[in-house]
Amino acid sequence: MEALKLPHIEQYLTACVQCGYCISVCEAHRQTPWESDTPRGKIYYLNQINVAGPLDKPLGRVASLNPYFVDAMYKCTGCGNCEAVCHANIPLVELWETVRTWMVKNGVGPLSAHKGMGEKVGKVHNPYGGDQAHRGDWWPAEVPKYDQPDVIFFAGCTGSFRQQQIPQTGVRVLNRAGVKMNILGADEWCCSSPLLRTGDTTHSLECAERIVEKADGMGAKDMVMTCSGCYKTISTDFGTYYAKVGQNVYHFTQYVNNLIKTRKLPLLQPFNHKVTYHDPCHLGRHMGVYEEPREILKAIKGIEFVEMDRNRANSRCCGAGGGYKSQFNNFAVRIAADRIRDAEKTGAEILVTACPFCVTNLSQGAKAINSKIKVMDIGEILLQITAPAEEPKEAPAATEPAKERIQA
Ligand code: SF4
Ligand code: SF4
Image 1 (cartoon, protein in one colour):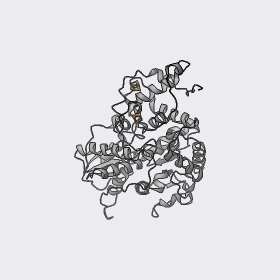
Image 2: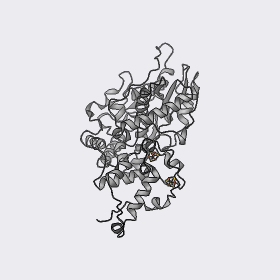
Image 3: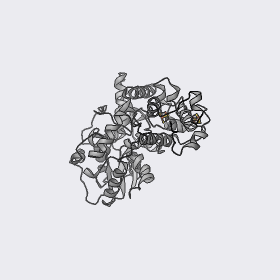
Image 4: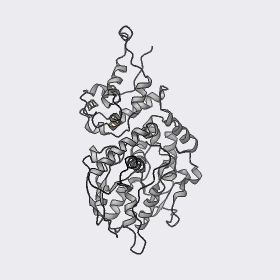
């Protein structure tokens, strides 16, 4: 059999000292007992593929792209906790994505759940198969749209088709600060995060091209998004395989924190609850946005803010990323349940986060263990506490889980 040629990752394989510090932080590995599912195990196996040679046959040694290895490579949420602790500073998230892309090119990936997402993005430009003509229907009628906006609000596929309340609360909050917004609507194609994370990059370039071209045509200065996956993809990945958008790209928490600090968004109501905050991996570990959501929460009168033991760079993943939830939903919900237990230990009533995927999976994790803790997106709290006194206040409510599982 012809030896497999790996992509340019040899330096990373060589750098791994097999210390195993990455193992205990890998939530995906905790769901299965196999060393081959650990970050170290994957690197070990890749090394065996790399050194394959003529002695393999007499030794009866076969290191190939077999189904077990492929499965192990996809048993990963892309959370980056392994990278955060790696002794040898190996860029492990990039490594996993590079290997998955290579596997897809070699015809052994992605997994069954991921294939449908890629096909739908190719056909209708979103992984849910939603009607793009109605993509912008989530926009709240009372919020004005501007022909010459300052901000393009990027809802993302999940915000547009599944968790519409998250972008809705987002634009309602920004509108209270007088931000002039518009959306790309039918021209808002998938940011391609699900494709990049699972290695199926067939349609990622056309998605980036469309978004960059249409966004630049709107003349806005900034782009704001409530989805942490879209934020990472548009602000960093676009620049690596296509081009950056012409706008300054902000996650909603960054933009709002600035509005609060510059006194453009008054916090009018108290929020008398004990809350803790879950760092979405794509926002925290991947993009370094740790403080802005905390600064917002700490600025709200009445909030008693408590940290979980695992926070910031050591935050436990919610289990939804990297195409893991699409393919291994039971494991993903179990990881989320562990994160809910982390939150329960603090005595918090509410677990706040800042990503629709985390909201979905954590809500399902809470339900799975009958937890009383409420899971809320940070925008939901902001909508309540920026309401003028005469407007009726909305009670905090757990967000409904999404109907379909797609994550990256
Ligand atoms: S990115 Fe997260 S899930 Fe994937 S191997 Fe690293 S620690 Fe495990
Ligand atoms: S922490 Fe880094 S160097 Fe150590 S085993 Fe894991 S990948 Fe290798």
